[in-house]
Image 1 (cartoon, one colour):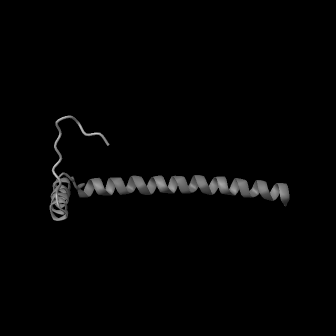
Image 2: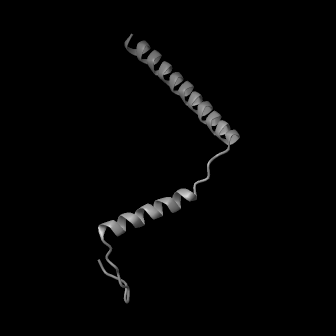
Image 3: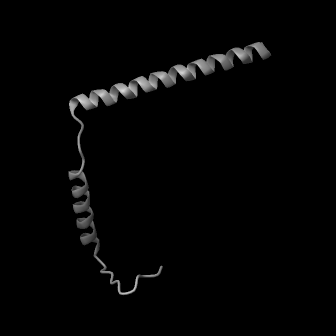
Length: 74
């Protein structure tokens, strides 16, 4: 693996790498935005409605294929 010209890499020990990792995790967690109660209800409703629609679609396709198989082999 080639290094960039003039780039110096400092090797850190395992404890220093762990501390840096934990600090980076905390910094990323501070960026997280939690949804409000209303947003959470809206998002959950959208997911439930979508799942019900997909369930109905799959049920319909399964029923049609089942009847077709029964008609052909029945």
